[in-house]
Amino acid sequence: MAATAAVERGRESYAKRSWVHAYESLSEVDRATPLGADDLELLARSAYMLGRDEDYVAALERAHRAHLDAGHDLPAANCAFWIGLNLFLRGETAPATGWFARAERLVDRQDADCVERGYVLTAVCTQQMAARDYEAAYATADEAAAIGERCGDRDLIAFARMEQGSAMLSLGRTDEGRRLVDETMVSVTAGELSPIAAGLVYCNTISFCQDAHELRRAREWTAALTRWCAQQPDMVAHTGICHVHRAELMTLGGAWEEALGELRRLGERRAGGMVNQRAMAQAAYQQGEVLRLTGEVDAAEMAYREASRLGREPQPGLALLRLVQGNVGAAAASIRRAVGEATQPLERAALLPAYVEIALAAEDVEAARVAWRELEEIAGRHGSDPLVASAAQAEGAVRLAEGDADAALTATRRAWNLWEELKAPYEAARARVLVGLACRGLGDEDTAALELEGARQAFIELGAAPDLASLRSLTGQPEPGDTGGLTARELEVLRLVAAGSSNRDIAAALTISEHTAARHLQNIFAKLHVSSRTAASAFAFEHHLV
Image (cartoon, rainbow, N blue to C red; front, side, top):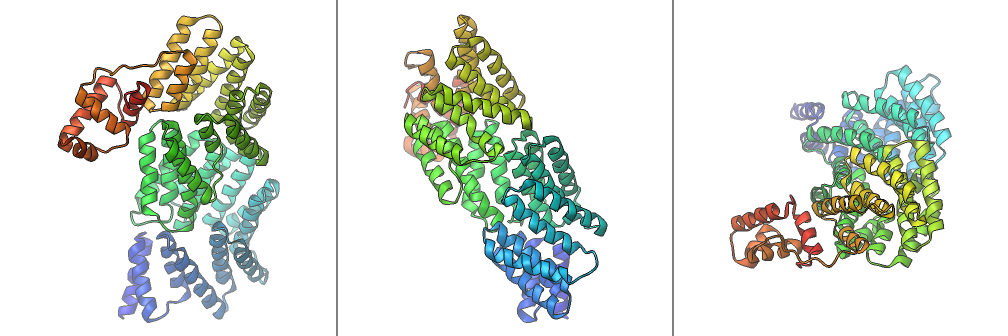
């Protein structure tokens, strides 16, 4: 009776998505008396949601064997599929293929139509997508979706539509891909899917959106994913990728300190589960991006190296870091290699803006022109606003290098307006620099000065120290020494802030209270007309106060 009560508690906790209680209750019973196949599946799913992938697979293997012993081939096939999918996403291709083959063999014993056949097809589709056979993947997913509709299985339908949307976006059939992505996500946000399916669809679809430069959709669905995670406070499985997606969007939106906070929280948690482990490499890369933009060169280098160690290509960030360091030759070699390896248009589109910037720094205008034209073609085919803005910005930079200020002004104005609409202040400021230089090329010094000053203020607020230094070089400004009206004590505090010190560190260094340190910092913000430690640090670096 006690065991029965514990099983019921586990089932109830599972239904309420109380993953810790579900896992503990079911595990307790299982240690005393082995669970039946159905309850083993509940135990497995609870383990998955807690990031315990080894326990997840072990429990599913036991459920698979129990179903086979009972002569239930289709539930056994279902378990085999989910084991294979987990292993495949972890990069364990050979055992994953074996489990997928076992699922297919069990399904092939059945003459009747069944939902398990659809899941087997999604496994085939996943492998086709990995092999970049997008046309075949779309057709396979379409067949799986039809089975899901006939059998009334919403998880299967969502998986199939998700893969179809990804295939369409990869093929450049953007409108179809967007509709399929949105249709899939509606099923998730409406609460129609099981927990594991919902988490996988959230994470994969947002990744598809970001890979396809679908910024608005990525923002909307990341907000939805954040709400979904918040509803399950003890969930571990999908929280890591949620941190990364939020950090990527914060970076684009100019909230760099907040982005680093998200990424550091993920690093501190070191959450389990294959989805979170995949997120760690992207988190390291994104941390490198923010640190590069703020001028923390050594820390950025370490972050890019960590991303590479975890299996994430560190380009274009590392090449752009070499450019910041003044090593144009190394930057050019790295970005050439990365672009040469990239075969898919959207992969190349993620690298080409950096290729243009580095080629122009190397005074290779022809290479920059070729890269801009390719980026423009990809942007025209896919039609996403960030790609269009990047292509316009690349055109403006190339036109300036060619001496065509009229064409440069038209292109850079278009880029600036698009980045402003997308709420991407750093990219907008960089475009505004080009606008100012184009105006200068046309002899309009007054407008050029206004545009460049606007960009300078944006860089200060963002804390973009390398861009401030570059802008000073472009405009021929003298080395600044303005203290911004700060007192001697405030200058001491500012120097410590620029060195990365916390309020507690500042208080200890200056033998003052944390409250006093915080008050000094607020006074500094007010005098410098900034709103963050990063922006205050940028002012300090720009004015050689450190």
